[in-house]
Length: 303
Image (tube, rainbow, N blue to C red; front, side):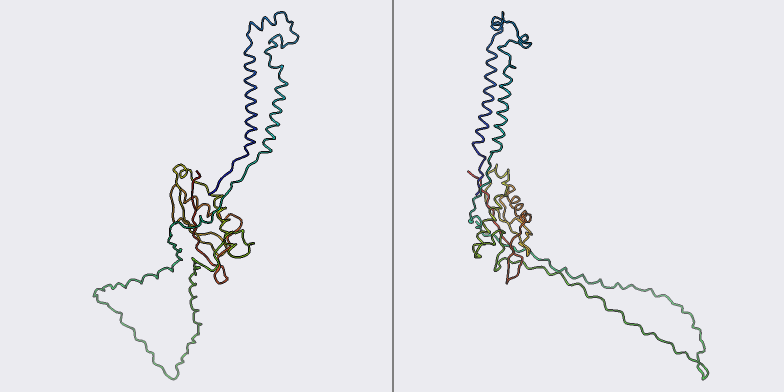
């Protein structure tokens, strides 16, 4: 499905040649200095007068400091060579081979539209009143006191003033229940991966969007180590909702092959919200709507 090219072979060969040259010089000088015998050096320098302090403590034939300049020059040349190799180091991005046949489902998958929120059930009826039996007890009532309320012509009667009160305002109506947007499975214009709106016909835009979507998935998909070690291959099927603003929501795994492959594919799908560009939402009758999208992702090991 996708192949990854390595770094430049020439850079590898240059570094290898430099390392081998350094090792060769070390081995050469070690063998050279070890080839001298002590008695041989004594006989060769028996009548030689020392000209410097170093010749008094070391034999000239095994004095490594006399080659310090050559070693320093070689070190500088090696450092410059490594710098040039590092500057000219060439790496190649992962080459992704996209085949639109990867979006064909191997088996039929039952598409289940996410359920919208249902209204809460009505509250249960109140319990029936409990009738308590009142014991038969004799109630002794106080004798009323009779007051003479007779009215004559001289009696003044004050008419009470009744204040009219405004009726209480009616209670506010309950808030309307939230309306859940319908999720479509098939619409007139299906949602598209971004980056292909400059194409001509809708067919060209759709094919280009599918190709770019596969490029994004295979570029960011990480094959789980446990699946690679156990040779797990197959097709993972995901479902997600492309919202009216192009964001991805409600991603879930419909079919999994195990070994972490489904989780890896789901991570890549959720990462589409961080691309910087959102999907082109689906449209029905000219207005954007929420659409359920089914996406198969193939996992295949390279031979």
